[in-house]
Length: 114
Length: 118
Image (cartoon, rainbow over all chains, first blue to last red; front, side, top):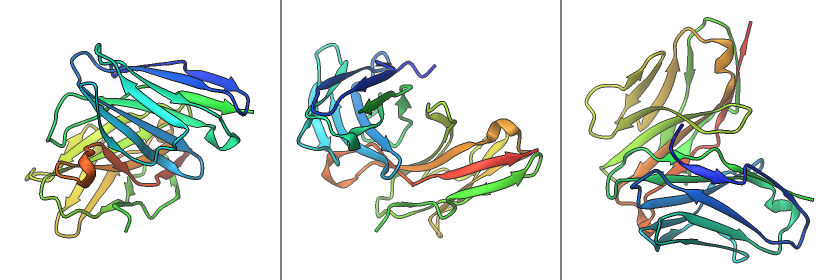
């Protein structure tokens, strides 16, 4: 158990809909990362938050947004969903900053868009 | 240029044989970490082993060892005495301390699908 909790584990929805994925980082970890894993794109970095502030953006679509709340949990919002958004979405957390230590991954949220 | 390159999309190996999964990386950051993760068909990312750029010795964790050749920018994973349960996707990843854009997360390779045959 990595200590990172993601909900829901599975989600099936229709095109055009909006979903919210939730992540609770390890206790005390200030950094949260979101990754998307699709069959054709591999693991892609989406966005990073540190202590409530957006720190870096990767390949995140404009239809997607995220935030990190004061209690450090994070939500990834996906809107106007398309078939191609079907993927496994991972959240990871890290307690260090400026160091190259381990990221701890949640079990992922598997999104299927029909 | 790709930061992490895994040149073996798939591998078939006989049970009990040793396996080497290749990984090369590209960075100008003197401080970085290299990771290997295992992803079974169930989907979770399982951390296997870590090598820091300043570590003098190659990392080992049970049956896993990392063959770190810094000058070649190579970080191959070696699995000794492979088991059927080792069948999974394996990802090499790098974390740079001073990466551009402020992100300090992991950059992943495309993975190697390892199948252990009885």
